[in-house]
Length: 281
Image (cartoon, rainbow, N blue to C red; front, side, top):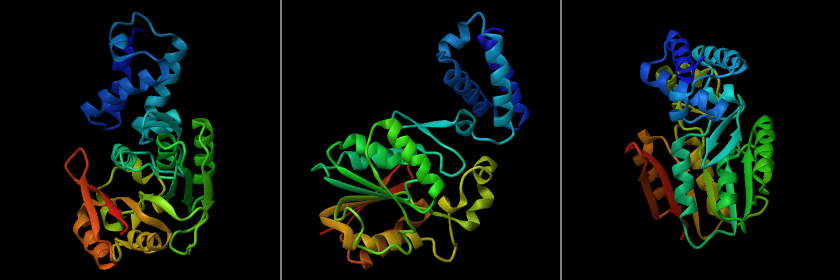
């Protein structure tokens, strides 16, 4: 089977699962590229793909058509140029979170201590450890399974991170390693009522504890983290959040009421309010 024939075979499987034409095309190329090492251009002109590869890829395509995220089928996701293991215990890293890391990485002076709250796969903590190799980096998560995966990713990336299993809603300062120059978090921020509009592959394959927050208190985690940040941030320390675009104004007002005067909202590549930075006075 030629490369283009394999592409069309995979695409047909994906379309049969109800995936849109544009997404099916992108996923088909991604699946072939990631598993064979062929570039898109090489796929289009390749005369033959080994039979073993074809037999391996078609069941993978069927799993994706059935709703399994391609990152789970592959066993990894790309984040800030790193290949990180992912599974059902952690969120799949998103491009918006890469933008948050990019913002934090551009700050000066370089931080000496960093805390990532709700680390999941470890993607934020690991990327910042690479950006600031002299910094002491710590990371917290409530899930032991998530921390096991994060530790494995940190080892593979060759960085040293202090991991702690804890619930940020009950954990009280002082934290190990504080004070911190940067505290950063991508906490649960999707309201329970928003689940109806979400894709099945997210709802059925990613941890709800890392996604959802009660409708009655959408700023629950931001409030808890900001309260603790007042005690664990160093002077002029910076607090970074990834946020729900629906609550940017409410969150800004909340942070102002807590005494944070230097609050900046930044949009993501799609024009949505997605990130906030607070500088402790």
